[in-house]
Length: 229
Ligand SMILES: [Zn+2]
Image (tube, rainbow, N blue to C red; front, side, top):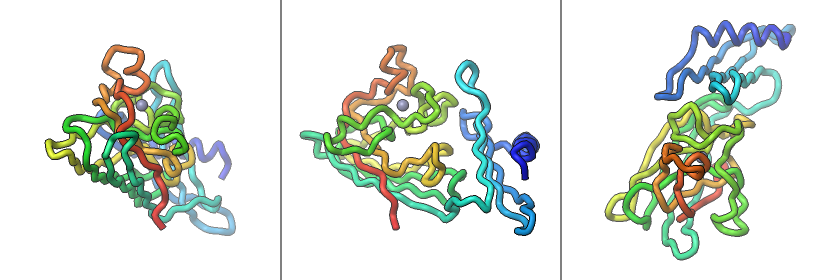
């Protein structure tokens, strides 16, 4: 199948198979078959993100066998430890049943945090040589501004807030359509997840910092995301 044929197929499939994901409009995921001469029908996976006015055009990821990529379900875990004097700790597990295009299930369990809302973000780097402080900005492969997890304008690493109870613990479960354990540009393995001291204002605070990190303050705990065998 030629590049042009793939693009034509994309446009046909994606106009008929768009899925809504909260306020994030029309992230299209289509799994289909296409014919490879001599090999028969092979899987074709397409993930499409709609254009964001004044920021980016429509974006397509096309995965077509028999090129090599891993379709097996994947899981990863981050073991979080407190930064500095913070006693916070916990685990966050990520599960993707259908890499590279399927959504990710996120399940977290954190303890010894101050009660209230705290921002949760995946940062670009997983380099822990200087603790949680020098992990770089939020993971942002599409070069957009900071936002909430259901906003069309967000960093891929923007996971919003968790609400910690009076006992200092929180358990949370999320499904996120952007993160991937296999998709190259959206892959999170090897990066760090960080719990911040303050709530994330989801980019709505009206300050310059709000559009960078949601004014969520310093890190309280972090951990590197690593594959589970
Ligand atoms: Zn962000």
